[in-house]
Image 1 (tube, rainbow, N blue to C red):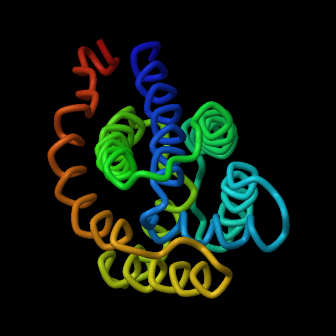
Image 2 (cartoon, one colour):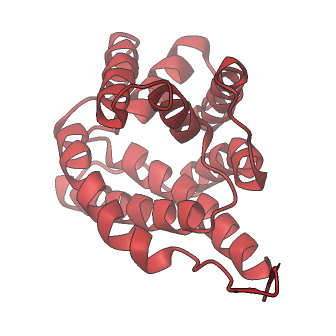
Length: 199
């Protein structure tokens, strides 16, 4: 369990860092983060706080779907937004395009590794992932559910002023294949069962 917890929290911290890197790149964010940024700008809160508040609201949507949160789900609600705000406080704004592109690439790679770590720990999905899997369990295609949810939050975030750009397209095209590479590498193998008990 200690190894899985270490992977979980390493993944959640890295996820928060990755979001901050993409925000500072200012070339476009992933769909959910366009939404988070748009809401943050409209209501005057930090993007990290909006990430956490959105996670709480999404978690409430689990109730009618009969989804059960795990340790990782609860930790996700708290850790990601705090780390995002802390990293943004440390990172300066950048004007030159080259370092911003480097931040975007680093952010997308870090996001994929982070996803592999915290999902691979097997201690509960993030609130947004759980919403998608919960809806899919009602007989809908996971790809369709994910596409509809992410298009919805992307459009709302864009209308609220969130950053949509080349980075949004690069993220959309790259994140699936990258997670497909890192998730198997970082998933904790189930413990063997001996005489009815985990070894």
